[in-house]
Image 1 (cartoon, rainbow, N blue to C red):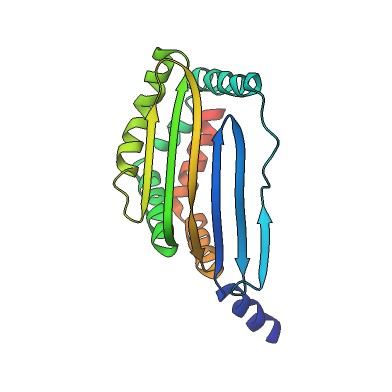
Image 2: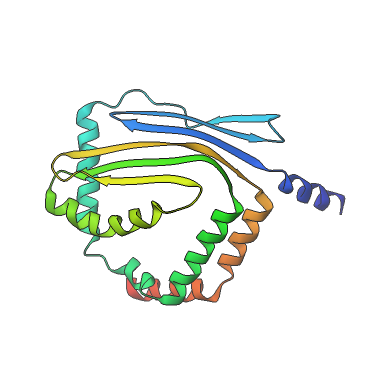
Amino acid sequence: MAVFLLLITLLVIPVTLTFKISWQQIFQSDVKLLWLFGLVCVRLFPSQPEIPAQENDELIKKVSYFWRSSREKTIPFAVIRQKAFRQRITRFIRDLWHAVQKRNLGLHIHIGLGDPADTGQLWAVVGPIAGMLSNVQGATIEIKPEFIDPTFKLDSSGTIRLIPLQLIYLIIALLLSPSIWRGVKKMRTAAS
């Protein structure tokens, strides 16, 4: 019983994640995880050496190829078409967003696949999401397309604070939801 109470007490102590991530030809990151009110500090995802321009171009080509090949795959869309599944995932994201305390949260993405047609088709999916995210309270989110050149630039920073027990509760509630299991079943039948 004492071990259970100790575990619950530890899960109630907030975890703070402070991050600054940038990718503009080179990947730079400064991500810290703080727990026990700053007594435990762990640095995550150290910056990597500079990525040569040709490797960055190869990454954009891979994303472009993945985007073109994934358009023909309908397995994820079988799940997304289910209204109950979409509503449950939306509710989970909304509950998670409200459970997390945010400070100075910002995300700026500039993306282009090098082919205006491919970028346009990607933007047909990402554009409406970008429009919704730009109105999110508590964060500055901006996603812009680049139709001419192959581009991927990312700037993100902020502080996120959450209580692990609250996160566990939200995940368990999501996993026990019948609409999620129906969606998984639908995805399996679409894959067969």
